[in-house]
Length: 131
Length: 319
Image 1 (cartoon, helix red, strand yellow):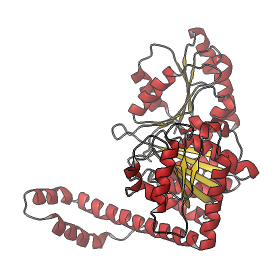
Image 2: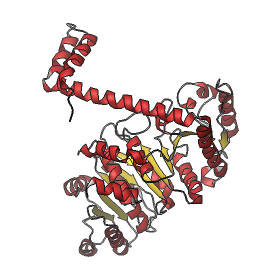
Image 3: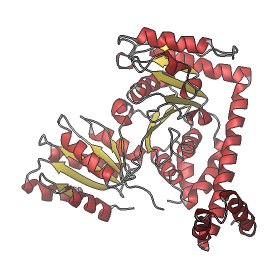
Image 4: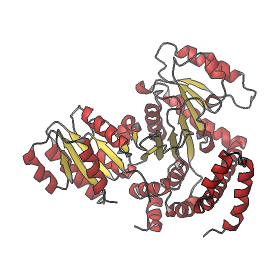
């Protein structure tokens, strides 16, 4: 069944900067994906509800506020609670290198930090979607 | 999970199963027809409301407010929000949920975004299928928000019981409102952003246009609303509900749904025949050869058409 990859781009927490998220959304659009953008200041519960209803293949979270160690794993946990186990979960933003192993252990599949070429991200998504 | 099980869970109100089924019917999957066939008998109960209007008119914001009002009495509402797909990359940005953030967690609301995927009528090819899934899933109201439309994207009228045309001030003079197309399909007109200058004039022009309609059975109402301030919403929702009662009582409901079924049937037959003719012609590379013949003026398109249709006769055995 050939269909476009569906991606939810989400901004969890109280960080009000979404230029990066919009640039990513646009880049994924140009790579042929259907990108659902839900806007600023989402709770993990809202993100998971949107991911379930939109039946996305990828959840991408962007966070610049420093709350990633709480919010990213929370989204992963709530997705698991809903029985969603076939969604690729990626994160991006200002994330210190030393936090990355912990996030991956918590179930985030990949973290993209500033300076990552957009093509690398697109390829990663295309090669790693789970269904 | 097998589809029969998904259908069972969807009928019990499970949102994830509902979402999965929409994905299946939104794509031309082998299962899509089977699913549609299986759920068909559970459909037909919802009031289907189309919301259309130009880009930036406030359709999503208005949808958010209308849904909140509709579900006030414990009813369930499904929303399908359509945004355009890029003709170049095939990708899209589906951003209608931004205006409906606090509906996401409401247990009685289901929102799904869709790309048009090359379809031009203001919807996507499978919007109809998705809405039937929601209908079967027990949603009392289904709101279809079209892409931002121009003048001729009128497909919404083929699937909605009630079409709400959202207008805003400042988009053109009164000649726009007497043109054919989009202005003819509204059952209710809402002038949104009515706090802006020019709103009265827009309302006046729409009213003048409507007064010229030969159909005197029902004249569509024109309402002033300001969605972001939640003004005029209660009256608008009352009008939406009243239109449904009018459809039922006047017998137009049945006429409209039967007309739509007929159009759907004809479309499905056309599509299937098209597939058969084209696959037959392409199998044998016939199509390209014929194009060369036509290009060289050895044949004309009409005789080739007749040849292709005659050649199809032996390929009509399906399944």
